[in-house]
Length: 428
Ligand code: ACO
Image (cartoon, rainbow, N blue to C red; front, side, top):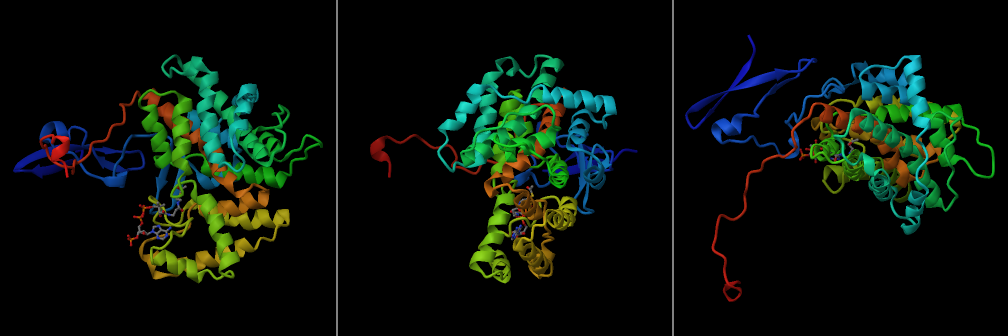
């Protein structure tokens, strides 16, 4: 017998269906409640609202589980490449050797961007934030592909747009870093794989041969995989919301980049590093003041807390281990790592953080690794976006394939009730 929820309102009883996911997650389906009773449900910040069904990513915040298409994040980070994970997220299955070869080959055919797009960089003032630039670049890409503005054209056309976008994102991200330094941009090289190509365009130099460090390539693959999807987070929900209006993919992803930029979401990775530097430079490495300020609600402890994880974020666990490893292999001795560990310990043993179940999230250790790899701090959230792109696209694709309804929440109005319009002289 299937479960039903009964809700009693003003003496009347309403039966609501229960839906169950493949991991036994349960939801009360309230979609007909308003039509039947005139009531809506209220859930500010969508803390308890399932906005869609999805077959892409499963996470259990209580148990600290994260899986893409059924595969544990620990296995994917250890055994897969970023392009394999991209393929998995987009298509639902891991690729065979042939499928991966074709996919990677398709990507290499679309890595160049229109030369006029390179000129867009010239209008940015020195020091403009890389995320603002990335948003502009994403919106600008749509201008160069007017044929892809209609997302309902055909599955083949959508697929081409997806490949173009995945292929051009590393080129744009690398250009942002190069232009920020005033260095000439490097054009993609088809001899390199996806991640090496990005590293080459970012850290290579027109004047010399580039030799990719396998430690760096491996670390970058891991970081991108760990960021690749995270079900209905703020930026992904934004991508789905914008996509639900049948806006094109570039516009939908541009909106996702905007949402990711916020310091409570992806922008936290930049904030974490700046916070650690602040502790080092202004507080003599003493972590206690920052913890006390966080408890007094004077500041957030960036890289701590998560809407869904009320236990360790499995991505943070992987990154903490990887961080030690990568820094040792690169021969980097960064005092910020010691400060981060001390801060983590101080927070994890403090009742404020224990009671609120606040644990390190993915952003806590990622910045220290990005720094060791040579990225400037303002680029960190761009790297998050590069990793999250296949997730955003897969979620957008799923929404479109399921022909989901336009996203349009309700509200409870709390403003003035109807009142007469006063003439100017009658206003106070
Ligand atoms: N530092 C100090 N206090 C915190 C923190 C923090 N990082 N996070 C939550 N709290 C406190 C809140 O003030 C609240 O306290 P109260 O019960 O006394 O009012 C309590 O913990 C519960 O927190 P909420 O804000 O209700 O949790 P919510 O789920 O809404 O927010 C969020 C989650 C936005 C991630 C929050 O923890 C935060 O702002 N963290 C810092 C920013 C950060 O690291 N963001 C990255 C998240 S991961 C990602 O997006 C990739």
